[in-house]
Length: 85
Image 1 (cartoon, rainbow, N blue to C red):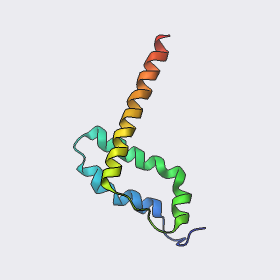
Image 2 (image 1 turned 45 degrees about the vertical axis):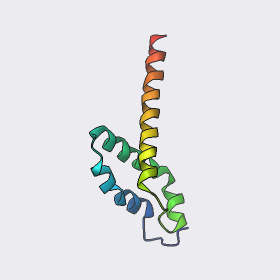
Image 3 (image 1 turned 30 degrees about the vertical axis):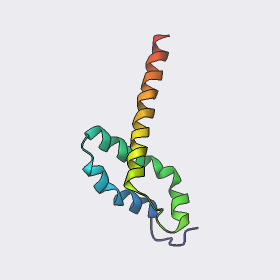
């Protein structure tokens, strides 16, 4: 149960990061960042239950997108390796 049942905190949080996404220079980075935010949908109930937006910092988000890019690249490498066998 949310403290603010009429507010969708998850959606507001994603919208608050649109400016950050738009300021990323690479189209790939923008796409990955927005995908990463949208992937948080599975946690929307937990986020909304908290009742207030969780604090975030641009540096942490930049680190996360870098990590996400590396994970994506590694996943592609594993898939290519499996296809060769």
